[in-house]
Image (cartoon, rainbow, N blue to C red; front, side, top):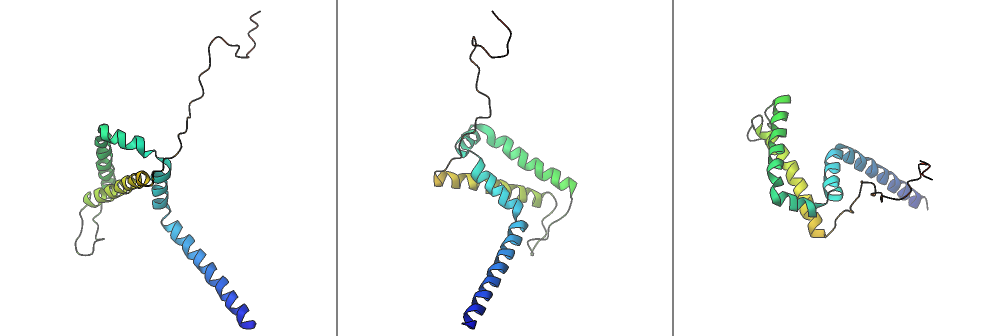
Length: 141
């Protein structure tokens, strides 16, 4: 019976260690996880694909290139991350911003494949009908 309790205690310890490691991993990758969640769960890609097809791809490309340029000017550095070569300033930032854009587009493709669209949120107040009493007591008697 003692062996069973020891095994259960070891199981609890291992599950606790697993939870801590998963939490640390989630915190480490939290910005990327938020990025994927946003583009997968919050963006209506049915409308997005239509907008991109009608010319919104051009401003998107401009935003990606300008973001890479600004990043390369704020933090100028070369990247030795590939191991076999050094990627010069601006080009590795362009690759990173392009990769983030590709992840967003893949999320849109995945949303389309799964057939899931987030619900429409109407943030505009309903239009008031004219000619009715608005209840602000003008005393029109």
